Image (tube, one colour):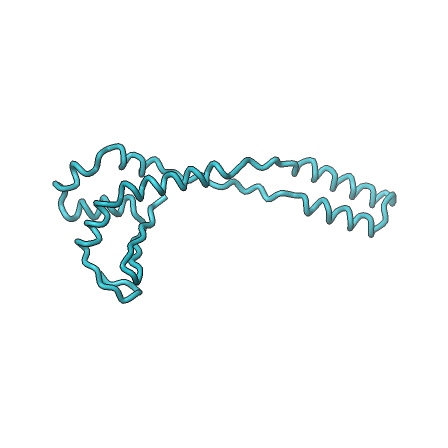
Length: 141
């Protein structure tokens, strides 16, 4: 197979690399995914309270109890406190974990070439061959 780094490497060499290193690479990927998911601490969301304060601030300005400068300054401070609360989807590693648990090595040898290709495509997004012929595996999420 050719890659953008002008490195030629046989498909069988990549397959042998995968067979030898996939378990370790999967374990590392799953551990990294868990670390990222657990690092996403829940954000304390006070957006509703801040929006209420903004509404009250607007009422004060409308009732002429605040000047325009005070309103703008206070509103800007409150707007800066609003938190973007788009939820981040956790990385699902259940398929990858099942590959590790099922003992894929015992049945892999008896698979046809097409089935082997399907197996790899089911867990691997892409394989990157670097100029130094090292191989990086990018897994599906």
